[in-house]
Length: 442
Ligand code: SAH
Ligand code: SF4
Ligand code: F3S
Image 1 (cartoon, helix red, strand yellow):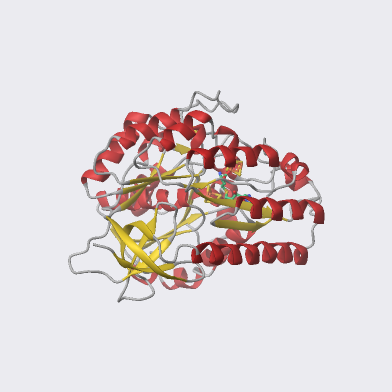
Image 2: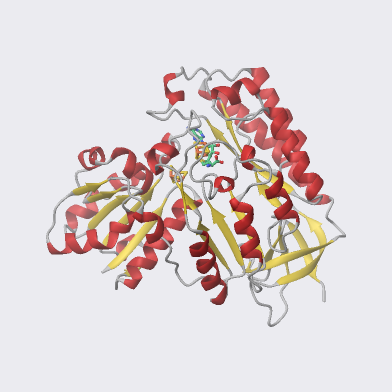
């Protein structure tokens, strides 16, 4: 049987899809790149904003005709929206065969076996902890791989659906993570991206209080990974600012592998909005943390997530967000227009900010970001940077790309024998709007 998987949403979902593809391959299924070659179509869905749900539903809805021409086709919805809607999704989409929620992903292979023997429609959405250990499989990787270290979230930010669709936060055993990392590195991986909704809460047993300054199981894990000799780089996403303590900062400062680029979600620069979002820090607290990280890692760059148009966000609140972003000088930012999610606490608030205002605020922040990033890149011209080579550039087959530890993409001309996943020095010759150009240095 041939299987096609389409993934919506975040890196956690990308990683789940990879693990599912690896499980399917091991069970004798063949993964295919296009939906018209497939006997099974799977959609790993996202619920974080209404648009994400609309996209997946539209896509699955559109397959109705295909299914009526080919009734043997099996269509499944997996992941976050599948979890949120369960049976409702089966009712809404009569040609959908099955729904597997986030706690039931490990049941994919048995479910397909069952459907091959006897067709029936089913929705499995029970939470289960088994999924945690069952999702460690990887496809053969090149030089970079992702490892999920936690699942779920206990923070309950008032706007966010994730704790409802991904369930309670659970951490994997450090020995399993390190073993998974060692296997990947033995297979050629040189960069690891550690994933979790709040990676800095790793190993705290789901305790929602940030740990004391000298305690961080996440820092212990980073130190373990640092001891794998061939591993060159470690990145992680996302830490919640209140859990980013002195112990973690010291571990990163002492680390050979952890990149000096920190994704630190801000969400808003206004204390009133942060409070309404149930984010447990203030603008000043956030800025203090940024200063502490900068003091330990002078070359660090930051990226962030920001929401514009949260209920009650005034012009003054928005200006505070804008000022805070400029003050930190983010290297990258993901800016989202607030989208009410059914069942969350914020959904009960009136969505007071009109769509055009959300749009305008979004545009202002993107313009600020674009101008700042371009100016920042100009300052690299003439300097030498170290990059991890990534292979042929997607835009220009004559060039290669590499990435600095601070997450800046650099294009350069390759030399014969150059391999992906190696550290190289590049002299920067010019800058573009979002990337750098340069020459390899011997
Ligand atoms: N756990 C991560 C975020 C996961 S969701 C963290 O806390 O950093 C990714 C981003 O989507 C969030 O950081 C937030 O900026 C955005 N987001 C979440 N819910 C949203 C909503 N209802 N409307 C708009 N953006 C939202
Ligand atoms: Fe959502 Fe907040 Fe958890 Fe991030 S920390 S996943 S924003 S509830
Ligand atoms: Fe990720 Fe979307 Fe689920 S952001 S955790 S795929 S709701």
